[in-house]
Length: 383
Image (cartoon, rainbow, N blue to C red; front, side):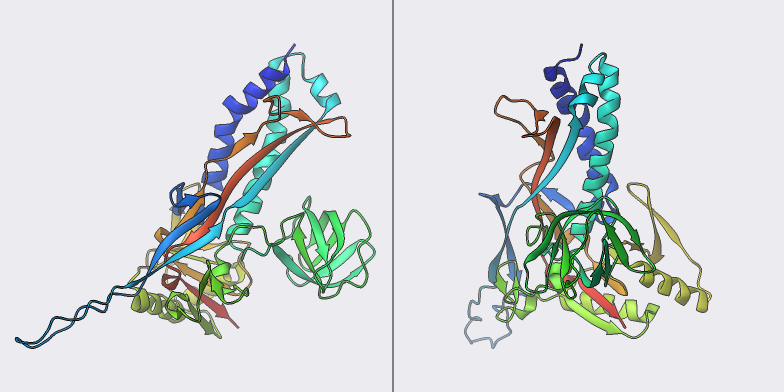
């Protein structure tokens, strides 16, 4: 009969490395390309030095004149809190007892539960990478019965447990489960009745409001005191990324953004990520100009279109009619370490849940995304 210690050993020594590898390699091609590092992490925060422009201490002078005055280039510190990212696996006592006859029964049980946990972690990690840190999934248009009509449906999916906020930032309904979505109608069905006076409210993943990763949209849509990683961008406008507005997505519009980034920063764009609508517009442009459509195979089994050899990847979590141009070498996922189990007071991983006949195991990662050169990134808004 399998013991609790054997179960812990299976979770720690068989599954943990597999879980970490699957999340790291199959979440998204953007995530595959960025650096993961424990450097510059201090007491639960990540601090990265950033240089503003070039030094001003180089100049030409006369043969008998003085040397240029020393003008040390300005260096500031980007700073962000590490996010607490948790995942919970839950197994009923009855299922656990049924699987205790042989180790293979237990492995089959955990295989299914852990696969679900990994899929959920990949989904939410990718969503956070494209977000702005607020945790807001979408604004709400109206609600009736168990149905909410929302402005943007693409960040919602069945099975998500969410908090519903009203327009004055109060929780109107907590920990509601999404039972299904209708993409064309932009509606989400819940397991309980929703508030009817919820127009202009919004939805967040349970407990995640203002606690999520500072994703790429944070660079372009940060509404907290005009601050970028603790730096006032009104005082240091150099660090602002490049933003363009286009009426139509064309190759010329893409090249314009790439050129603006290169002109400002000297950086080379190596990855383009966009919404599904932007990808369709790009394909239409290629078809209208009778340009060959090239595809690239990326690490992790992903495929992307090509723009002058630069991958153009469509991600469901990019806002509609949006395209980003990045140098992925400027991004780093600062972390205390890889995914790991949280152990109970007795050292066990799988522990009894309080007040229920269930057992739970908690997975944790402490990390945040930071861009070392925000000014070398760009975004195109397509009207």
